[in-house]
Image 1 (cartoon, rainbow, N blue to C red):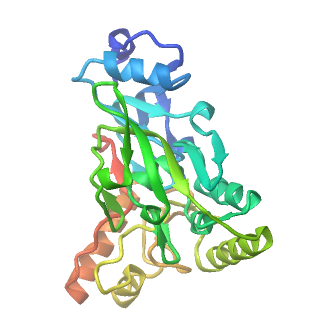
Image 2: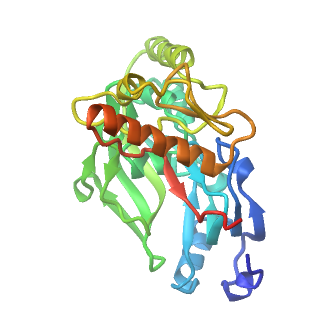
Length: 302
């Protein structure tokens, strides 16, 4: 990738790094480099960058990479990774105010520690709050929209604005939040409850997740959304894809809506495997599976 991009970027208080390996930042442990990786110092620094960055330079934001497949050719432009300044959590009565970089599981545990229920399901969702809000993440019968109050976003012009629940259309694993907007903070409403009862529910969810999902593998969470009236894993199983392998990429024998990097997989192995599964399910059951994992970057030319 060209190395002159930094010269075109605005001066910032945070840190730029060129041609930066992204493999260690995503759960699959595959993918090419970021042309430039930017770690903003704080909200003001991020707003300044977005406002001053030339609009013809692609900008991509990533969380902890739990639901992300980065292609082998890497990501052109600037990849933004939010650090500790965006991971703070505070409690105001029955509200939990969370930085977009905070882990979903940490929010669930914070709620329990403060006697607030309603956040338990977040312990079953890998990733950060920013991504959870953007895709209306959910599990065990609950979704972000059930607890959401408001969020702060940075628009493509670098302006920070607050959006209330009525400003956002929440759907299954989807919102109408613009892809160019960066979520930086969100507020959720909890319900007062006994700490021991909350912890018991938390432990039940985490135990079930450990028993039913390949949580200790190099994976990326659920690969496909559940089609209306179906469960993706059942369709994949019926199509005979459980345990199917392409290169170093494997359909998990434990839960077949998960793809696994066995250690030697490339991003193209994983994407090809996902597309193979999609085609088999379509062929057998005439149902189109929709990717839940986000795939970004360019294919490797070599």
